[in-house]
Image 1 (cartoon, rainbow over the protein chains, first blue to last red):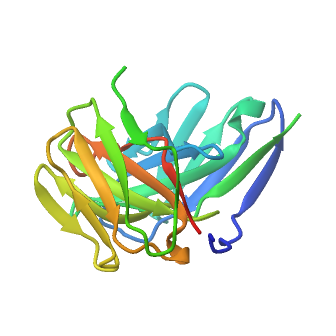
Image 2: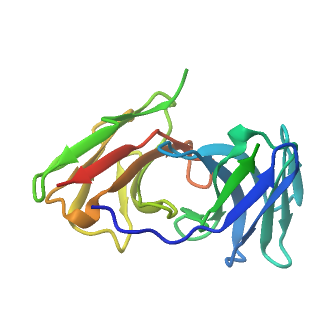
Length: 113
Length: 112
């Protein structure tokens, strides 16, 4: 059967509060970053992306912040809802090399009603 | 709606019995990817096709093969599944490398 996976970092947030999920990346050549949401038993779903010529991008209830100096990416979700409970992955892509997406470890977000 | 479709959603096979998973897309994207995802882990890229050009990841076992007969379809063949191959298999597409990848719902493979 399936092997036991790694323990995901977890974050629990009260419904209605804001949540911040952080991600560190190591490749200074990365120029494109994506946040994905993955609910149990489903494929990753695109949330928001940002290119390295920007440091902030906003979507509906979500904001991505990029700090290239410290190679840090964050996803802010405003006014969390029960449907926000999922695993969130950051992914980075480099313009150089074979340009594949490199996924971060993932963070499990649980919204407490 | 344009989308990435994977069939079947659940697949059970026996140890050593070849199995094929399928992916189709209506997005007309150039690139199609296959990922393996185990419990509580990030997706791991196995290989991708850019049009007809196959790009294998260095650490993908030879047991895993892929075919892309046309733009819309891509198949993952596991020649002799082992217990360690039980996982979720995700197909994704993108317009080009370096762009957003659109994922299918995945196929959950169980190996008995």
